[in-house]
Length: 586
Image 1: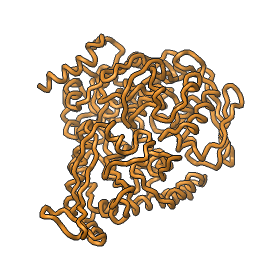
Image 2: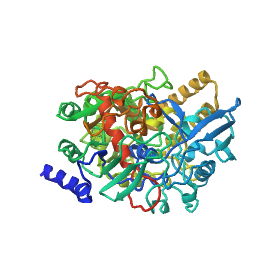
Image 3: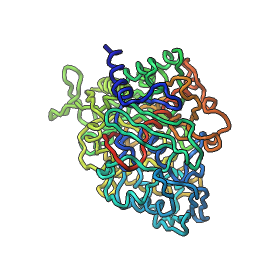
Image 4: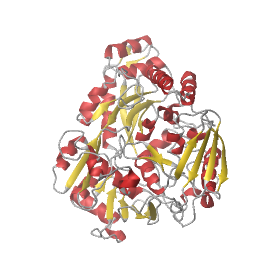
């Protein structure tokens, strides 16, 4: 029955659309859901959504395989000694997918647009930082900052995707933009979206005039196969060439030893956490959130859920391998402390099953939202709930689709003020670890005027002020001290519990495409994987940039896992605007 389901799904999403599975130059990457038409104001998921978006749209700066910032749309940039002015020169040969030249006017338009029309990811990177954006020549832009901003090159310049003015000047909407959905994407990246069949597939073709060189793969097809087991069966059967989803740990060795399949694994900066709704009791009390933290065994989660393929979470959010990590900061699992704090809060009485309740009868019984399309997330929520049960907190998993889950946690852009959850399985994509300042997008105080992705609506004025000071500090040693203090605030005030950083593990079929580039901390779903070596910042095939294999060693499997992700991102990406159709998820 399962095999029949897989064949039916793949047949419906690939074969029936007329795609020749044997055609050369094509890579087929299975994804789990629609991501609308993949424009900057409509894409829905952090991964693979943003990764695919940047295969369709470019940023002024980007990164090489070592995750170092390099010029991209900008051929050159210069920062003034006081850090208040950044001059950028745009490449002369950059064009939009419809053939029109990409100019400084497009850059200015983009930055002005995201200040006027809120975007949960991009607006916080620009608002309060950029004072003016001025076109000084057809190919030159000058950014005047309100204050020195240490991470300006990383974000916004290395993160904000540039919009084509001639299309978006007719759209005046916050994210998510209904009008922005009304066509295929029109970007400037290495791949163009030429087909989007909702609930079926996306199809992208290489941009032969790309300023960084013609992409290595002619066509990327992203069939939508919601069930992860069906995706694996499709991979085994040769119906798809790669899967975008991170493999379940038990499949890493099995698929790595399968004929014609490789698995790439390695450390990934993607963060898995559980967010608490600080806008409602008892989560509005720091002691209760601390109790939840003490009751959570993050090392146990890595062992039970990931079979050891991951790094236990740091309570300060920053990955231990990051240069910004505060050394010595460790999660503390202490059930006795958790019980003591709950006693202090008055939750002393217990039901026959051990669930605590207050003197006035309030039961510590909550729901944990988890994405039904992510088996690892659902399993993590189950184990997390069982751990809290040992402290007398009953936590039951509520499995929802990505769209339904987002609707209860503020929407994909964080724009909705209401919050309808207790615990939410959440996290952050790898780019958040590029610089801790990017924590502002998920932890800075949420307001209607500043609707960040802070789902729990946690607010700490000291954190907000320290974040501002750290971002303005240009002395690296002093800035590291401030960033360390930020991590300590997160650790003590507990807006969430960082559970783990899951190793990347992605499977792909050999022969379809093997020259993947593993971007440090991020994996292979990156346009760097599909570009000439000179553009990718590598002098050899990507397969050598990350080890591949089928054993249990994390490093030996990183390359393959990343390879699958890279393919998935490319295939799922979307051009910009022309026709459309979609759904969403963040």
